[in-house]
Image 1: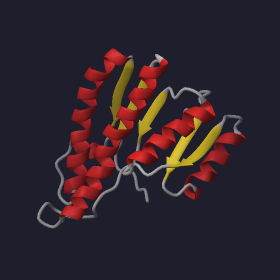
Image 2 (image 1 turned 45 degrees about the horizontal axis):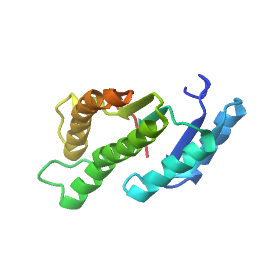
Image 3 (image 1 turned 180 degrees about the vertical axis):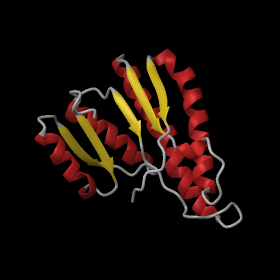
Image 4 (image 1 turned 90 degrees about the horizontal axis):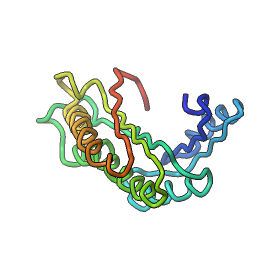
Length: 169
């Protein structure tokens, strides 16, 4: 959608081979796209992703925080700390980390910025069996609201999108 609107697109994933096909599809439309390695749970990987992306494409106008995992069909009584940490490090901490790094870039360049966080319909519905996922997405909604207030002084808009159920890897 962004490339069709004329944007250059920077895609990141731990397994770049998973997104290379998407880059090819975008480039076939005449838009510019690149794929870079990104592990949202690693601070240095996040920093390198944004720096390399800015070097390759110029200023980054929009950051979309889209990484998300779940622990499987587990209740609060079933999960362990590794489940909890994996979900929260991926779904919530990474959003804070990438948004903070992105804000530093925007402040240096005095540009306008946009952060879009991908929440979930589970942030608003009470369901069983997705305990850490639903809690992390609800926390992401609240984080987005607070970030929106705090980022305004840096000329950055922050919003969340909460799609319905989408089957992904």
